[in-house]
Amino acid sequence: MLGFELTQRFGAKAAFISAGGYHHHIGLNTWESEGGLPPPPRATGLYHLAIVYPTRADLADALRRLQAAGIALDSAADHGVSEALYLRDPDKNGLELYWDRPPEAWPRTPEGELSMFTRSLNLRNLLAEPAVG
Image (tube, rainbow, N blue to C red; front, side, top):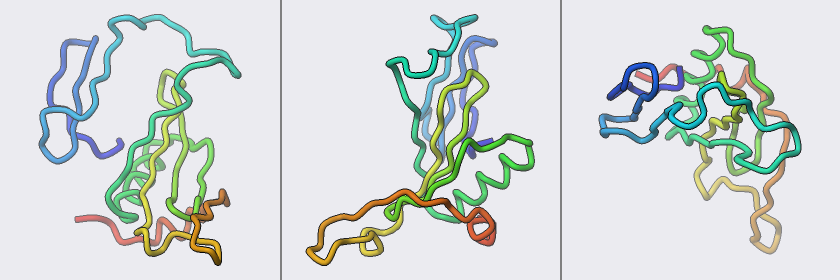
């Protein structure tokens, strides 16, 4: 769904996925968590896992795959330096899918300091990106 390839599986307990043919970039398992519950709101722990896509077109392709599968977004944001999609995995863990704008396009103050923000991301505009490959 997110554009990774399955490189190895250990039954229903673990899977290893990669981008671009590497042996694995992410290992997913239920060795300690099977049957566990997600943390309640306002609890400590991992807020979300962020996955960076190399281009805006790659992020648009990920959004198309999510929409085709009927997976809802929690939100979508333009941070000035990046554009991001936020969602939950099947275990309710937070995921951020994003791409970084080139540094020369980052918003800056008159003094040259970084000036990030959070605004709503125009999904129609993102989906206007041509499909990759």
